[in-house]
Image (cartoon, rainbow, N blue to C red; front, side, top):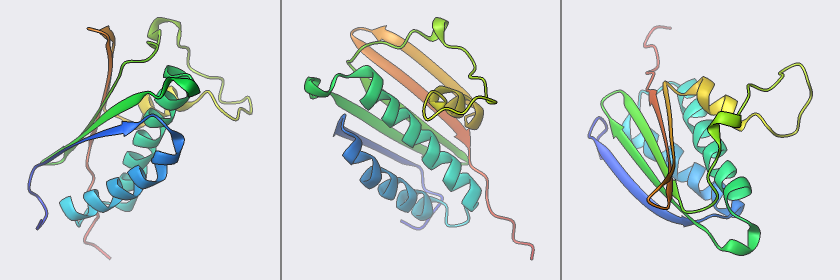
Length: 147
């Protein structure tokens, strides 16, 4: 891969938190191969988006005994990164979601907020034919050549 070629990767993964770190390592390497000039802050943001989405599915969508599966699709086209997460677990009720009080110390509860803040698009389709689909899209920032 020489960079700048469109990429689409689909991964069918167990919904287990242990998968998170290999998924992140794969994503960071893929981004570097796709766009060697990608800004480090953008890599960090994209990594955090994927981290939060995958974690939320593992923790909130499935019960530990469910042995759930998550399909993660990564699409890199031009200066756009899209991540599509599909699962068959418990649907998220987006209507009940509220922006967290950022003044309150919390160990969790900010994942959706982070995904919405860091993404250009946040699209969630609950129980679409037994499938929950979360699509997150972000523009890729390239590193400045100055300096």
